[in-house]
Structures are given as C-alpha cells and as structure tokens.
Length: 426
Length: 174
Image 1: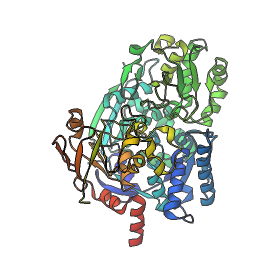
Image 2 (image 1 turned 60 degrees about the horizontal axis):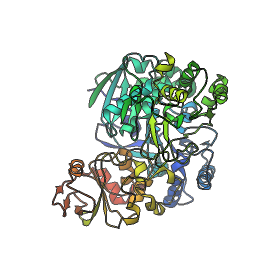
Image 3 (image 1 turned 90 degrees about the horizontal axis):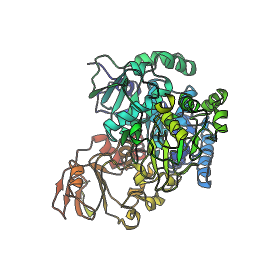
Image 4 (image 1 turned 90 degrees about the vertical axis):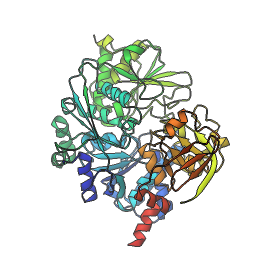
C-alpha cells in the first residue's frame, strides 16, 4: 500500500516509519507566532524556562505582526514590544513588523516555506501553507512555547481525505465559490482531524492565489492540513523564491498512486455558480442569486483567504465593468494581504481607481478578521466580506456578515445590495 | 485520575466556535487568570456564565467544540473559572491540543450530542463524572454516558501537567 503526502512528511519529520493513528514527535522547520498569541508564547516560555533560557534555534523562529498592525491600542502595542524585545535577546532575526502583512503570505513570499516543511503558527489558518505542500498547522501558545525548547512537537498521524476537482469555472465564478460549496457540503466538523489532498485538473491548473483560497478554509471544516504539491507556474514561482530544492521536495512528498484515503470526493466546477456563506456560520451556504437584493452596509475584500493580487484583480474586473464606481450608500474597504501585493496593485493602476471611487484601500493586515480592528461593524449592520468566518458577533456584537468571493463582494459594492457578479460582467 | 466529581452542568450544542467561548475582542489579554470574566460573553443565552459559574461546574457540549481560532484563551477562560473538565462528543483539533498541552482534561463522550438535542442532559443538571473513564451519570434525568479512551501519549502529557512539564520530565530522565 502506498503512502499519502502527510505520512511521507511525518516520516521525514520524525525520522522513522509511521502509520495513521500513531502519535509521533516531529522536528519543526518553523515555529512562528503573530502579534496575537506571540506575547503569550514569550511570557509562557520565560515563566516556565526562566529568563536566561535560550530557544533551540533562533533561525527557525519567526514573528509576524498582522492581526492588529499597526497597533491600535496600548495593550497591543505592549504585546508587540514584548515580542520585539524577546527577538532581540534571543537573536531571532525574522521579525516581520507592522509594515509586512499577513504572516503565512509574507513567509511564503520570503521563500521560507518548502514542500514537506513542518510549520507551526499561532494562526488557525496557518495550514493554508498546505497550498505549497507544507504541513503547516495552527496551534496555541503552549505548543509554540514548548517547541522552542528543543524544536519538536507531538502529532497524531491523520487519515487523509482526497478531493478531486475537474472542469473550468464559468465567468464570474471562482475558487472561492468551490470552497464555499465544499464548506456547505461537509459542514463545520466535516474534516475534523483529517489531512486533505486536493487533486485533479482544476487544481493542477490553479494559480497560487487560488490554491491559497482553497486551502485557507479547511480550518472552517476543522481539518488538520490541506496539501497540494507545487507544479507548473506555482512550482516555478516557488523555485525562484525558495530554491531548486522545492522541485525535489514536490516529487518526494507527492502521494503514491496507490495511497489509501478515508474518503474520496469529486467536484466538477463546470456548472458551479457564485455562492455565499450566510449569517452566522461558514457552512450556512446559499447561491448568491437566492439572496440577491439583500441590503448591506459594508463590503470588505481581503484576508488570508482572498487578499492576493489576483483577488484584488478579480474585484477590479467587476468594478471596471461597472464604470469604476461603487454605490455611495455602502462603505467599501480593500486590504491587500502583503506589502508586495499592495505594491503590485498600485503599479497596476488599480489602487488609484479604487481611491477615486471612494474605496478605502488599507495597509496590508488581517483586517476585519476581528472586532478589534478598524472597520468593525456596529450592532444592526450587515457586512459582506471575503474573510473566512462569520460567527455570531465576530466583527461586532449584533452585526451579521455574508462571506463570498471578491467578485461577488465587488458586485455587491457596485449595487449596494447583494449581487451576482454575472449580472455586471454579462 | 480515578476521581469521581460531582457538579452542575452548563450545556452547549454542536460547533461552538472560539469566538462564542472567548471573543476576539479580548485577545490582547496575556494573563490566564483574567480570562474567565469574558467566558461565553457572546454566546446567546449564556451571557451570564462568567458571573454564575461555580468551581466544580462542568461544561458539556456536542460535536466539534472549540472550532475556529487557535486562541488558547478559550481553554484558559474555562479552566481558570474552576471547571474541572470539558465533556464533549468531540472537539476541534486545535482546542483538543490546547487543552491537553495545559494538562487540562477534555473527554470525548459518546452520544452526548444527540442527548443534548433530546433534552436528556440540560443546564443545571447534577452530574457525577469519572475523570478516569469519562463515564457520566446525570443525577437529575438518570441518563448515563460513556467516555472514549484517551491515548497513552495524551494521558502522559496530562498527568505531567502539560506539554512543557512533560518535556521537562523527559529531559530530566535522560
């Protein structure tokens, strides 16, 4: 019987043969923390190990400032300082401060992440790095602080689900809509404790941005890690950033043809339509067409799910088709995922057009993933967002949010009510 | 851990996310002792939890408890409120790790999700819980439940008092 990708990755990381269900100790390639959770990790490490204790390897630790960057309160500013000071004391050089953007995206652009790497981070969407074949996983502060002691951590070797995707998206329909479809089908616990391999022609032809989108919401089904091995243009991009070893690793960690899966699901995207996660849960899914006309107060495009250049470009396509105007009755906020994306969008001339139309185009951050950020919704308001969660009161008590693709979100911004982007794109 | 505990139940349904347990508004908090005051503040109908929970009470939930964020605050706010154990049909994987890594027990209870929906275990019921087996007797309704076995590694980490303590023990043995 062949091996799945996650079994191969855990065999490399633990240095021994493993089987599904085993508890194994894996060597960690990157142990990272954000401005949220990071201070907790530092304080816990120093309390448990003493102020003089050294981390196992300062070159395998990184900090990213993304949830509340720049700091919006004294408490957050203090937490960020705790991290900066710790990094200085420990000789940790990779501190991506407030001017960088969303952690996973920043580390990916910096060429730090390779297929087969074991990556920990205090972000439950860490596992979107499975989009380039790494076993990245979100953990709490204890996992991070413990991993700093000797660079290992424990994992259960998970069963793997395989999702095969075929077909081409119609105009106005995107990877986000496929993802929303899968979340609706499987539900909030539909991948609990599982690894998930995405395969098939649609995935093989997908851009890095699309792969990131698809992988970003595996967490919303409680999955452990999604895995896609880099190929084609994505492989080229990765090799440029992280070196030729990426190509070897992509081969090494690809699943064997006779690997065993707990479930195999098949999706054909040919007839897929724009979908939305309705209030107040990601798995409460309806076609955008069905909820069209619903009044909204604010539209937000960004996040680790849909904040790449291609996402902003997709929104721009709809915006342009509508004459580069948004409805004056709604507030529209666009947040690029990283500074690199922000520069790309600026150079492409999109930012100027958005600003002229009255869109708020922000610095790169996680933005409206919390109620502790600008753009928070007051009670009674309805939001429309490309983030990945719309739990009760998530971005403001008494508010409600519809999650959808950047194209659907921009179509909604143009009309001021929920709108199917195909109505604008024609 | 052959202890049998007795206390009141606080009952929740399936897919209780971390924002309902501990809202993102309070993420900048770094001291676990300050976290219980915010527990379940955003959970409709359970806003009074933080004020009224008593040490020894139990949190009882259905499937996928603690889905969503990686915030360990969602474990601390229950643990530091004096709740000795979370009893759920299943919990999300990050929540499970965060609990075990703190030496805090989360026990998986077969059939409890359906029992909650059927009203066989309700808010305020008096429970008897065996920490060793996860077996539960609802003294109010008479319903009984059985816990799933916990793997050896998780047991070892919990009995060491958490992951860091476990690693220290292992280092001392070498």
